[in-house]
Image (cartoon, rainbow, N blue to C red; front, side):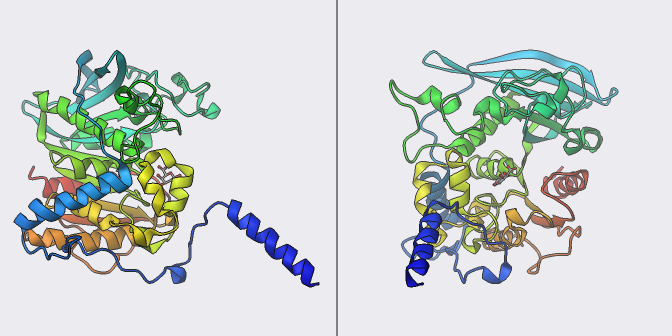
Length: 422
Ligand code: GTR
């Protein structure tokens, strides 16, 4: 009998070692935790005003995220060439003009091309824009037959006709419900999108993304504190911003960077690292996006590092299973966006992204907004589903699943109207 118990114990222990890390989906099992204080430096100095925040604490936090989480960009690379495929295509039944350009990046003979699709409301002046990556290619955001097809690697999806990692006509318009273009244009905003896989294909190799342009001979992956895919995608958003600054029809002082899910994590990191983005919207960004890591609810550090190790730098692997050792938590990422408007959104059926952790993080980030004389998130309790809370930090939890819907977009347009100084 004893032997049998021992065998069972040994067997389950060995299974345990091989097992994938598990997600806690039970609120009662959230551990007691304490997040690092936003306004106390690592050496214990109290931050009392904007000047100290901007000179001391903000750079300290930014560096910690750069070194320990997302990874540093190893050098400078500017746009080598802009290829204009289309400058004023008539689109959306005459409501908008369409532009399509390629941004070309070249370094030591290696080249990457990022295709950018732009719809702008017809206007005599410059217009504010939303900038957001898409998941499967620019042609998926609308049935518009003029949108060019990406040649980059796309994950196989036979039901969408994506075979051998190449898209075909079959996926044109498949994401149009996530991109209510007419509503955005009618509200007076342009929309700028690109396929994130043009910058770095979303697969575990780090061989054919923008990072590879920086490799020296024989190098096959970034250094331990250098960029994973999220930092590379965020870098790409900044390069699109470089282009937007040169576009006479775009108001580059009013670019709202937005992203859903992994692209929400990316939008947050882009807004943290590049203060030219006037506003940031995180839609269901979850783990290592808006949600607090120390709650260990839903997706956690070990899970995300197991499934998507290449999204982050190698240093980040140290924190598998020990979120409490992280020198940062995600409210500090949100605080890097202050004093700019920020919108954090969750969905009721998206417990994997830990809506409560996203809300609490937005709440905690308010301390930095207070330094600027701003209220931050105006409530302390999580609102009811579909009842948005509006402030310089806004929040809502929408009924439904992990997705970005016209309801979400309506709130984002409303917040941009209120807080972008339009
Ligand atoms: C999931 C991942 C999340 C989120 C999501 C997405 O598999 O666990 O962190 O990024 O993908 O991007 O759709």
